Image 1 (cartoon, rainbow, N blue to C red):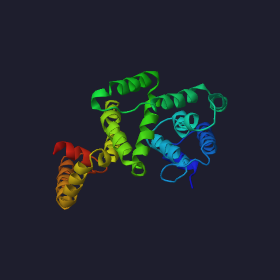
Image 2: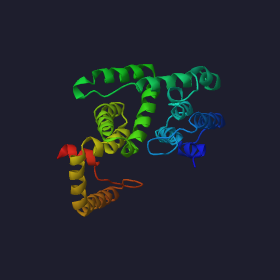
Image 3: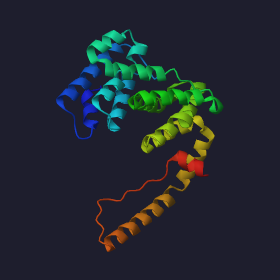
Length: 247
């Protein structure tokens, strides 16, 4: 069972009463609009837009962007009209939803023919960067449920994500999002290579952990000896996709 308060809790620093009211209103509006619709996984379609909104909240987006994320498929996939949405939420949110809908027409045609795809993204960015960020969140959740899509379509979506979405996220300074997109797409874009990296990591898991722990301890020691204050030092193994690129 979903609850709009799950989204609110993810917003760092909290939200104003007006912003919470807006997100709650968009949540119920989208839930009613998508009522009865199912995804290929058999889950209610609303789960997808709800998870998209949660990703946007984690990214620190504002209430209007999160609300547009909740409703990003309403105009395309339901009987709700643009006029109805505008009456309830105003021009700005309708503009964002329409922008995401237009970007949804982007189809991957191979590495040598993706110039038009990039052009559409850049035009959307010029109009309002929030449109692209909603599309990134939409794509990331779609990648997380890609196992339910037929094999040929899975590969196309995964390659498109790695070759178009991830580099654009990186150019926008969204490195964590770029890595998440690559990691989710990697098993479907390059399954043999993914298995190779996965097996290698499993084989050397203890070795990597020991090396990182040693470096952490040495760094902590040096910082203390030099009276440098710090809260915590954390570490992680590189993502599977980035490791493969270095092999």
